[in-house]
Length: 454
Image (cartoon, rainbow, N blue to C red; front, top):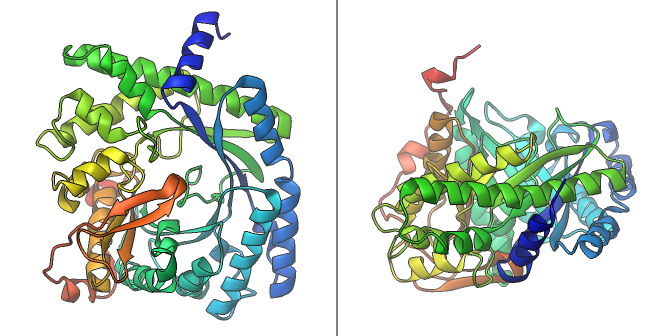
């Protein structure tokens, strides 16, 4: 039971500390939609999504009104599209048609985003995988709500460097295809290593093949809540610091658990996981960077940043697993530059570099997220950045990702702006030395020796 003190604390967190449920995401399996006829396939996809998600948004709004808990986004994730389309798609344009169908279904359901225009190619690519990947620039340019992801590596299989090389080219093409909107397409495209099947956060959400037919996953966030709690123990020792973060994460996760159970009950859909991620927004007071600076850094990027982030990430997870038996997804701390005012400030003043961000990804929840880079960055260099990030995930047995935005026509010192939750980002410098010969080698980087466990 939730007691009156918890109710009072939750109200304070909502009113003054930017606590929210970032997303209710309905995962929908499309495995039973497979068809050799493209038109029939699209029709099945549209009908299943709109039928299963018809009450998702209204249910979310009803829970918001009844409990007073802001639910910022209502989203859908679907089975990776390459897995269901091989029999019907013969060219990239066929996959673009499916993307348009997904966009129409998302619009019909009233959700913010739909994830799952995805391919899982950590060991190799099927013809359908490659066709989907090559369709991504056009698909993201002609849709509004569709998000795309490609998993190119895992601890068990190694890194598919052919896919890494291709994704460097695809990211540049996506930037060029959406240049008129500050290369927005790249903000909806993420490259993964060890992608989880149950992540409710975009742009990387998809509905894994081991998941039930329909499931509800909830993502909660509360950077402002954690920062406010740490202000009350300023100057205290590390034990007090850790206990404060852990207890705060527990309270935040309890809010998500309540919303998830209510949504599951009202929709008649199984509850999957709570993703407790400190996911920042452009709003003042909703910044992971501000937490790290409250811990004692003059600026994010200073010596000690990686250690402070490791501490934060671990205590958030410890608090979360005490509050819910089903914590999953990407739970931890996100460090997206464009969505975090503190990160933006640190990057603009030169305290935070791409190399330091990469080091931080060794201990945080995901990876290089929403990083704007110069528009003339070579595709091979983009692939090299991706390869570095995938290697961190593979060797450390964790999920890592890269969401890079080559800002076409812009250079270091300029910025890109997307509005809303996606925010804006300063263009950050990229090492000018080439990795072309390394990237152009064919094949896979083998799995590390510690992957062989059974």
